[in-house]
Length: 229
Length: 255
Ligand SMILES: Nc1ncnc2c1ncn2[C@@H]1O[C@H](COP(=O)(O)OP(=O)(O)O)[C@@H](O)[C@H]1O
Ligand SMILES: [Mg+2]
Image 1 (tube, rainbow over the protein chains, first blue to last red):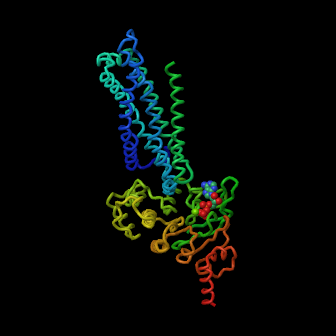
Image 2: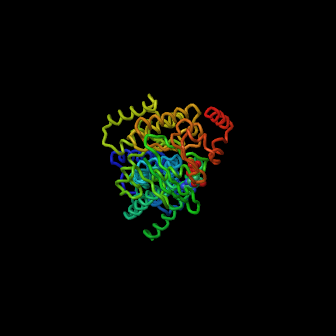
């Protein structure tokens, strides 16, 4: 991928375009999902602890833990495998079947560098998307908690601060970085090496989504076992 | 001039090109013809360096491509223009951006110089006022013109076209064929065209290489193809009744 780098003036444009398509273009849906899933997690937790001995702040605590550890890094990444992953596979796959990749190669351009490198750079901003997901998930929980009368703002805020382990943040972002890598490589591979026509582009996108999610879920298991237990 | 010697190419067990030897001359439109599946595209992709081959050599103006250093290979590549069967325009770029792309990648031209050059070649292929359209908004014939413009923008010495008029109506097809021939003559390019279209053969077949099942079965020109008795060629050429009649008339006229 790094041999025969594309001219910087051209590469810069490709990177900016991919940041726009892959990162900026995902923020809306990620924000929407995070806010409401955060709310639901809070409501579910609150409804399941009606024992008066359990302190109210636990709702905030449980929301924070599930949002930061699993929901934002893993669940959002699986959704991104559908959104960003299929986009990468179908756009590169279309270029393959319409001979646009051959056209690049004939011109002596390293097509992997031209197509995949900018996506890597763009997706290195992916942790930024996940930070938004974490923040909005917790805010969603807060709003649901107060609006539904499950606990007071103070209880919730106390809950999200209690027993805070900084390593959890390291763990979450380490996962995020690895998932970003998976989101760039697996779909690009499925697009670049596909054969056939328009129908196969559709099939390749589906296969790529399946494999990207499988890899993310398995990696998540391995990392959690290694880092947290 | 491009010289091909004993070119052999297989995919696994399938032997596709079986020892092809021929030359393609400068300033001429050289046609590779044959049925679908006869190996035309594979041959062209070997010429372009997109496929490796087990045996044989291809030389560009005396330089054997496989023996060149990476730098020298790149120099040869910079002299190659290619028109793909489906045009292969970059669909994320406008028509003008497509045409300027090789200049952006390989020259140090300023934006104005690139625009001038793009204007010039787009005029040359009779396309004006389409600069800001995207390929998806252009007709098949227009896309083909853009592909030709992109292929010649960096003044190539060698031009390759894979079935440049497939999918076009007969009238547009002839316009495109003639355009390629004019450009070839005007800039003295070595042009190699894949085709299975007898109209093209009659319009622009200055040199014709006939492939059958990966073998060179015949070679000649549009003047000699009607006179040959080679059975595989006559089978191919006279598969249509129209051409059977044309041949009869031709032979009567030239007795
Ligand atoms: N990438 C490839 N891998 C394996 N076989 C191929 C490949 N490309 C072409 N072939 C085979 O080579 C033969 C010639 O194909 P091609 O050159 O495309 O024919 P055409 O004369 O129609 O252009 C066909 O039998 C085709 O199946
Ligand atoms: Mg072909």
